[in-house]
Amino acid sequence: MSRQSILVSLLILSLLLGAGYWVSQLLVKKEIELPTGLQGEAAVNPLLAAERFLAAMGISTTPLDDTSRLLRKLGPTDVLLISSDRQTLGLERTSALLEWVAGGGRLIATVPHLSKEEEPLRDPLLETLGLTLFYVDEESIADDMNEYADYLDVDWPSANDFMKIDIGLLYVLEGAKSGDWVIENDWGAVLVRRQYGDGSVTIVTDLEFIQFLQIGNHDHAKFLWHLVDGQGPVWLITNNDMPSLWEWLWQYAPEIMTAALLWLGLWLWSQSRRFGPRLAELPPVRRRILEHVEANGRFLWHQKQSPHLVAAVRKHFITTAANRYPGWGRMSDEERAELLASITDQDVRTTRRLLEEPEIRHQHEFTRMIRQYENIRKQL
Image 1 (cartoon, rainbow, N blue to C red):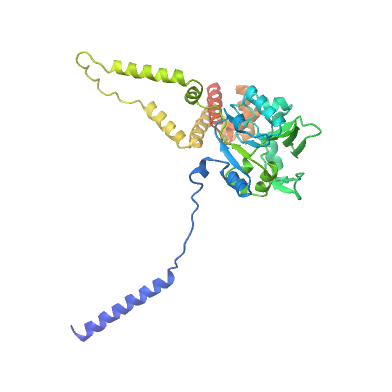
Image 2: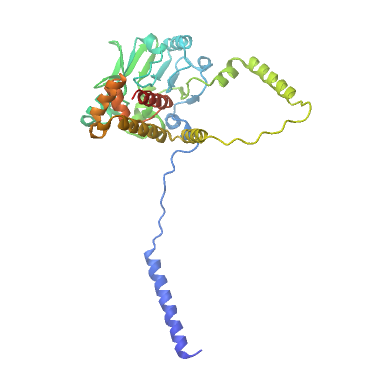
């Protein structure tokens, strides 16, 4: 190798080393933590953080899923906190629960959460206490939200200072008595605590402020400690909704279910006996396009993509209205709502909400919204 080739090779090597060093000075190693959301039990148990907080404060806390044998476990001065809609607590169980409260127990419960258009569930607990639940109009809340903070300043009897609490605004209670401890916002009472015999009953319109990570906001954890009076034991019920028919039958009629399964097994065994040759299989039938559409809808629903389904129905609804009424495109939203109300005998508030992009929070809201779209579309 000539001297010139060696010099060129050394020059290229030097340039490569220099470029590598320059690049290494530009690169910076940094560790970044990406939020992954709640995992495991914390993702399915809304009161897990509250349970851990109370335990850290030295208060014995036990979560419960089944309320069928609840009264056998409760002590005379225990605290029972129910954050669900209490659909399985009928009149008989509610009466037994209030007898336990009169003996010194402390009950903290929320109210059934339904939309204004739905029929309210009968609530034996509220009826016994003489309280009435009212739904606050969302439009009035939206008009006034800019004038108020997103929390209430609560003066609790056992607290030495005001506490900031973010309680939902969609529901208020009426019927509080003079001796009750009441927390109110500008629309009505959101918390009522009543002395009941030797115990107490606390009704809160919304307990979401102690669920999941919201307990870490404002003074929510401190307020929970005062709600349970700083002492336990505390029993937490997060799922008291109506069980499925299958679960209900296994719980209350296990003998009948066992006999039915045995009969089903015998029937399947009898059907497995074949006499003679098998019939020729029919050629496969091509699936209809409607079946693919239905399968796509079911997939989106199971993937919690109901807003996409509602958006598609809403788009079809608006397109139909625009085709039927040529002046639709020149109308304002209010004029369109009034036109639909006059045609379909619906109130303007309902038609205005259908023209907007609705927020779907529950399955029953999704079903009701789709039914309203279809009913009005057929009347156009």
